[in-house]
Amino acid sequence: MSELNSATATGAVTIRKCDALEEMQACFALQKEVWKFSDADLVPVRMFVVAAKIGGQVVGAFAGAQVVGFALAIPAIRNGHSYLHSQMLAVHPQYRNGGLGRRLKLYQRDDALARGFELMEWTFDPLEIKNAYLNIEKLGAISRRYNVNQYGITSSPLQGGLPTDRLIAEWWMKSKRVETVLAGTSRPQFDYPARIDVPADIYVWKADATTRAQALAVQQRNRGQFAGFFAQGLSVLAYERDRRGNGRFLLGEWDEGWRY
Image (cartoon, rainbow, N blue to C red; front, side, top):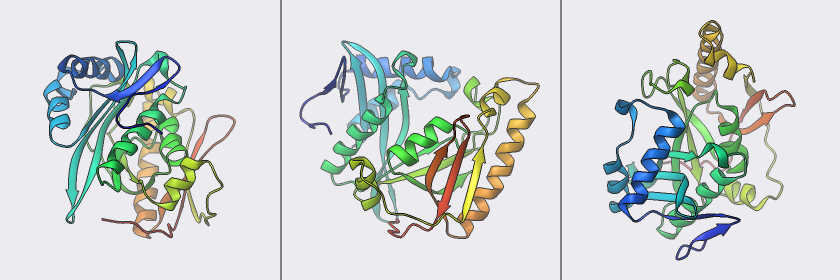
């Protein structure tokens, strides 16, 4: 965990809040490099500046003076309770698969808890197997809400022209579930009466116009399954990956039941 009044360094990468405008401009540039959005889809620099000034978060991962990752969050409110919405997290391609995304989230959690927040939310593509595994298994988030085509069809090639369906990750940062997951100890066992599969081939199917219909069929099938299971009161509580890279959401009843 990070000390909030000092930088957190592991190896050559340091994580700290971004204060200078130039640092926020570097976050903006990294956003464009990672998602390859057109200008119309980019979150502007002024949003980074505003987030830092109104109680949100602009957290950077620095390799020397270079920004190699960042997390952007804004304050939100629902049913009279404040929480943080983490709008975006990006890691430079050369720094992926080394735990840097998780470190950014943990820094966000430290800062949020120090300021009295219990909940952080963000959206993620349920077809992205690595992100789903990080969110559910490595951070302890749950999901019980699904938004259809939240951002419309975007310019990012990562989306493959598919609707931007999103699961909402709820990260109840003081829950037993999250504390257990982050401590690395065995978590409570759950019954999983439902599962939803994501084939590893989804990335290839999305990237190729000749197979994109197969990716869309998976998205539409899973969209209906999520809607049905969530209507039954089930939540995403676990995520599995097999040796071939296929993903699987496991759904059950969450006994803690935190909710705003």
